[in-house]
Length: 337
Image (tube, rainbow, N blue to C red):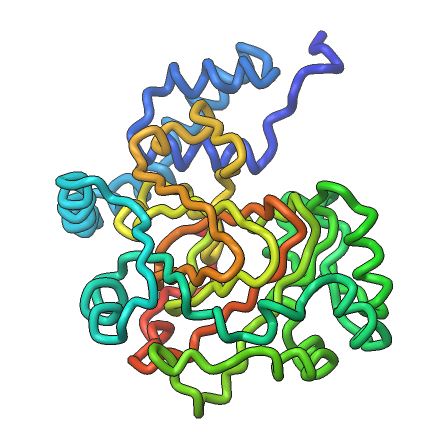
């Protein structure tokens, strides 16, 4: 009789088996991972044998071979990335021409310092200021994130409306948590409710189009907030106003190895990468940086990134660059991959 404590094989496990078989993993290694996770040995072996006989997996494997040349091109870029020490450089008041030539047009991340020195927000913004000046504003916040591993994908289900002052009080008392966070998913309501805050921001005319209708996105949360590995569909600026954030970045050429499971997200947890579950991550080039108050991080389109709030933090992100930033027309869509 099967133990009541034995882990059952569900469709999540079957997708994992299929994906790893198609990618060329050794069946015995997959079996070992399943057994270690609590799946009965015979059940694991039987499931793998069934999967290996499946005509669906055989068809997907043939498709993978047709796509192999696309992977070859990406592997060329991966190899070139390793010809030198790839890192997130810091440049003080990087001029427009050099930023475009060396970073924007080449898709390289960079941290720019000194460009926020004149922002009133750098002197005025703190929790006391938010509560006293905008405490009665009705804002939208993401709640219940700890109970849902797919909280970013399911962001609509986590929206709650509350007084901004009450949210600030929650942050003060929270300690370290990822359970609630005001993010870009709340922008529609919060841009109107907190419109007065935008008076404390100045246009970054060196890099951005001040006439653009895009006003940016406001992020505010306690220490411990997590934005899981994902890529954006545009180039992006992260301007850090309060607190520090730890950012992990993966070059776009690594896309075949980051387990892109749905739309632009990966299930790989940047806090503790599980190399048994995600073995291809062992060979992925991961960059790390700390974004400090007063600094801007340029996130290139397609660059995978994981963001962790080290302190109570506030960030303003924006996409209104002077140069073409529309890359969505040929994006393959919001499907499970």
